[in-house]
Length: 248
Image 1: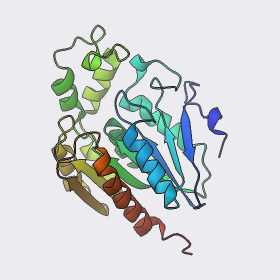
Image 2 (image 1 turned 30 degrees about the vertical axis):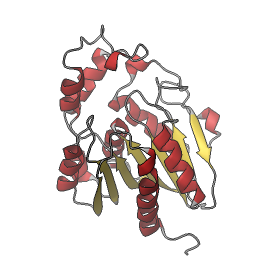
Image 3 (image 1 turned 120 degrees about the horizontal axis):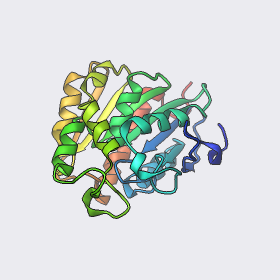
């Protein structure tokens, strides 16, 4: 793999990463965050730490324009993040199987990428966003693009490009139908940002090997009490599809 500090997207913006080494040499778990997030969101750190303890090396990364990655937040959108994910995939050895874990909007990025990029061997969505246009209307319908902010966060201006991109995509259902990789979906039943129905709709149309786990009481970002459940579920999915540790 290319030195982590050298990972750059097609705009030549550096992608910030954190690597969790472990004992497996045949698989890498990549973890992508959601809107306004970064690689250091607690649920991603907890999941990567827990999986690495069970033998799965993990790579957390921050999409361009967010956190410590280069780029402007105003340019961030699903389409650009697909390019970021493909840039990271391009640095990895073809001998390594890639499991991609995407949270929220990062889940939409994963579905849209996996539907056309077989470098992703296994897909995992955490509170994945399916209805992108409905999300924009629901959360930012009363905010003026180019002038207002996302959730009144000073560092997160709502750009016209972001709104146009998510409206243009509308939903990820056609991509979900095209996913052929084993796909695990996990969603909190108390998610008030991306409704659990988003995962139910994606699961319904998917024709690949799939499983949907709904966590009672869990919110959008999951809580510390949910972390062991996430680790157990993802670990089991990986064992089933990438083989037990030490298996030939």
